[in-house]
Length: 165
Image (cartoon, rainbow, N blue to C red; front, side, top):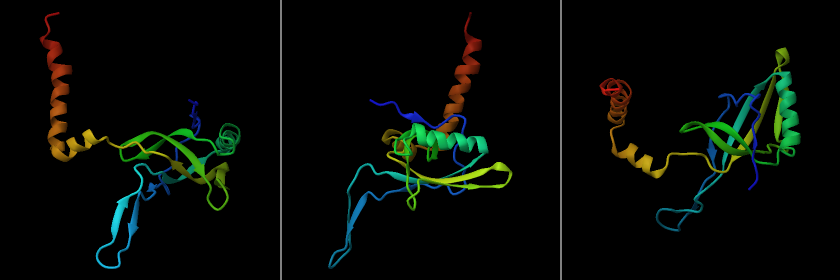
């Protein structure tokens, strides 16, 4: 098992500007001579492309360039990074994917700021598991949250006052 390189803690996470989740299609479609087209699932796991953008200071950009070249073998290796998804910010395994024959684009801005744009590919995004999905689909979410709040209050506020010690 190899140890995954991590996104440098000194560097900011991608901005929301231009950020998107673009999952690859997991289905195949066959148009029929007559009747509706048929669709079938081809894959259970497909990569997701995520366009990203960073605003980096000159020092942060120098750090990014060196990290990209020296730690990621010019962007060919996978790395661990926290990215935004449906469940919030969570850890992902990602790698840079080339856009127009370049792995990233860096444009200098005013005040020594660099705007770096690229696209990341993640092999599998963290999502809700099936049990959690079933609960969310079957139950009243507002009622569940109210029940959790009541349980929290009972355990942390009411019960400690009832103990004899």
